[in-house]
Length: 129
Image (cartoon, rainbow, N blue to C red):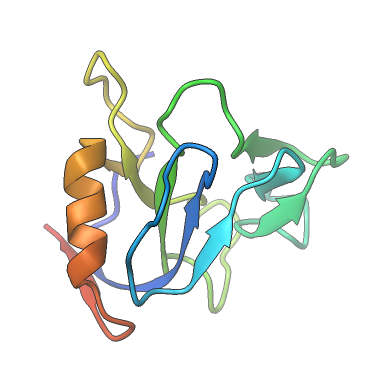
């Protein structure tokens, strides 16, 4: 998947409250638990949505050993309406230690992501060019 270009709203923020204390933002926050995943299986009616795991459909775990999903901004990409096979789990999240490419997401340093969240508003838009 290539990172989609466009202007996107922000749905909400997912975060690991055991790793990120006092996350300050006016965006709706949801604490990540061990039973949370993101459905990336186009056969599911929950494709491109937050789900409870385990699931019979393919999904991406959100509660991970590495820190890339300690803070996640969920972009309003391919959500209403959802189009199968047009991409799922397009997030802004923490870059891994090797600065490797993502599978369509935008990844930045944790400290920078937390700074950005302090300034975002519910009406903020993300522009990807």
